[in-house]
Image 1: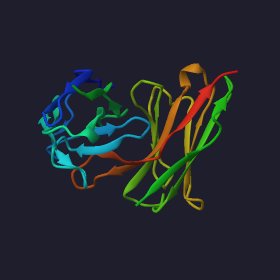
Image 2: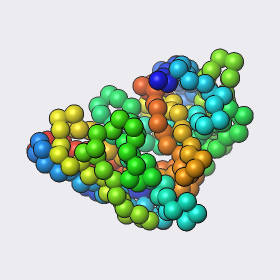
Image 3: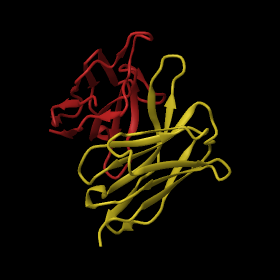
Image 4: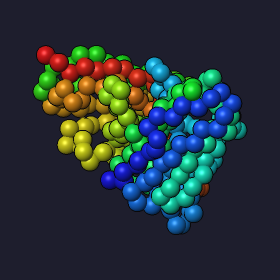
Length: 113
Length: 124
């Protein structure tokens, strides 16, 4: 199985400041034929299901604010929230679909400083 | 806007079978663009993918659960279901059903719509 490791586990950020979350996969999730990374980011608020934010490592899902951006390739990925808003307090997960079983990172909890 | 809703018993005894159903509205389980999936989340923990089914009936299961899992689809009712046999306390979790979008052009599978989740507790 591909193991997804996120860092940090907890992140405290001031309102309007940048938040950066890292995700590392134990093997590459870059598909050589499509040149796409099979990596997604999800946001989960308390008591709610996860919500798809980004796929192909950097493509925003429709309706997702542009303060959310994804980057990286191969085994190392980053989710950046450029200016943290009140509604962004949540747990964020990365997920790979390069190889079955699809696996998730353990999550990063983003809170206000 | 597709909506998914899980239903089923909230309490299951150890060694018995957990059975859940997901009812899909605003979309069709017979779509050839989507698969239909189950994911679970123990309290305070991360997400574990259980498996998915295509409308044709083809399935893909997490190998760690494969011997105990069956996912089926009922196109006439626009539902899909999960059965997990021989449950233990370790199977206590919130169970989510989700739509899995697969991208034919660029590849990849993305959980793009989720149900609200249902808590299943395994206890005698």
